[in-house]
Image (cartoon, rainbow, N blue to C red; front, side, top):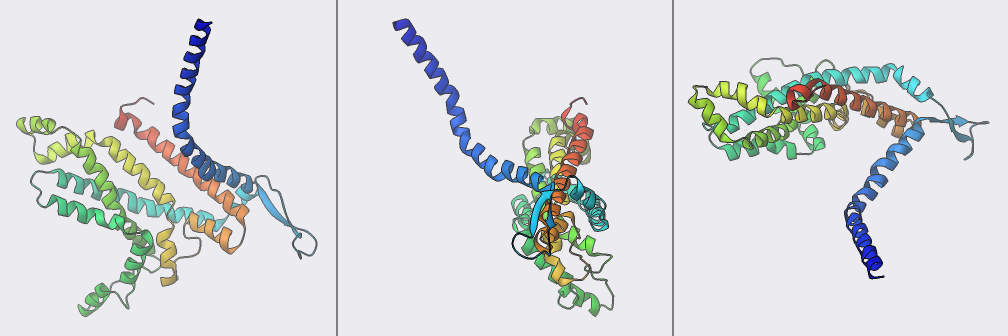
Length: 312
């Protein structure tokens, strides 16, 4: 009897030990299901629905939600406005991501150099724009772009020069990219700089003893060592590029160069809140999510061998 009791107590103790981690994880699991998994599933369901008008279209029961199959997806993928927004975002990403990563890497390498002075002030100054919300920074830069109120435009006019506005149709993508560049360089710089500080200084000392210059140490030692950080910042920058919304949406009242469908997320916003077509907006959201996942997966597959030393 005592042996059975001892065995039962041990089994109960094991169950309690196994239950403790799940108990600690349960709040996070519940929050994930309620605020992440459930909205995703609901959006997926809505994307296969559409609204059908019956009769004269009058009254509360005149519109019914019916199964639409792939109609919403086919309509989106053949919509010229959506395809144009995808093209604009791709151009925006080609302008922004390489420039932002190169500047962040240069600043991180300069701050990591022993010859650099005022590192703390420089680090805070470069990072500070990231702390400014995107809406506020867009408003600040938007007024700087307006020729009538911009002090830079006034100075240029006093010198007798004529500078085109970055809010004009052909240059507005550069204006939006500049806002994101101003705010994003600091975050990426901090990630790279932290990775550099985690590397033992003995490696750099050995390279300098062998006669390597600062540039050679940066190109042949520092950059290869922090390659995982470079890949991570590139991936996050690509995802943020595909989700650009605040900057063009905030600049829209200041210029006629930005349509309501300038970016894919603005396309979703228009369908959901202007046209009251949540089914089309849901399908567009799913398409954007799948495109983001596909681009991220392909990018990681291309760089994983070089950055992480993994085989395909």
